[in-house]
Image 1 (spheres, rainbow, N blue to C red):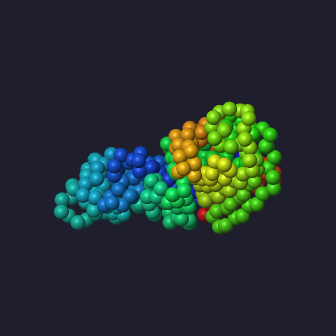
Image 2: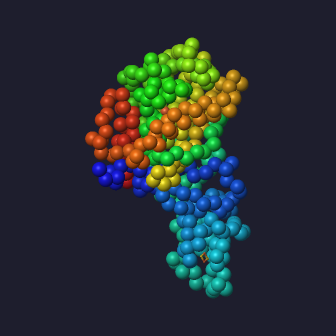
Image 3: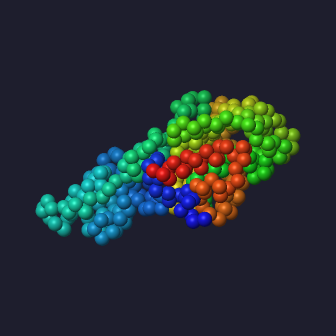
Length: 336
Ligand code: FES
Ligand SMILES: [Fe+2]
């Protein structure tokens, strides 16, 4: 099957949705910074207090604008000094002196929208079909935060969302962390589609998180828990888990489709047991790194870096209802 019938990180429909491109903490000032999204290079800069995403190449002689400097709130190209404002308008061509004749082709087309939220810079290349995914607990004092360093996987964002939504792999892929070989059956569950999102709710028995963190494979306490998933288009995943005695935990997986075989994952965790001091952000980060490594080791072995849009390519069962809905939603993204 041709890869064009697969949903990859370079699907043009992705231009109509929000993507994270950097954390404020990782950016060293206003820029300009080079960024890569959906297989294209761009320039990120804060001009007059507003983040802008402009093409990577200067329209004059194609010098990288990320090599330029910010002067008086404008981005100045390092080669011949052409200056651009936050809308991409070329406002100065020094070689022409005071002549006002700036050619039409000197102007850049900026990304449709750029915002800062949750300490992350978000970009929509075209007018976005949805809002930035919501973290309902962000301001809630009952929750403490743990934020993983950004890391890149050799996989597509669709495959990573597929994996994070999947409840049938825990007892096999995650035997070193959250997996329980005695809990592999997926009970019937509820799934609802709402426009560009869907939710699914799973009830099952689980180990107590603090036992799992200790790395001991035996004598786990178990309890009934509920895992509530939400997928926000194109491939951002929210997972809310009630960890019984360990309190509620929310994981937000945001994905930056960098190019066809590379995805950066931004994982923000919000946990009640951080706010009440029973666990530290470092405990959560170490544990999720261990869980993520199990997924990553498997996922990076998949040869095609995409998810098939032809639903007959894979074999689906009732246990795969959530990840099947992901494929349906991605078909809608691809149809834009
Ligand atoms: S290449 Fe940018 S001003 Fe000439
Ligand atoms: Fe997993």
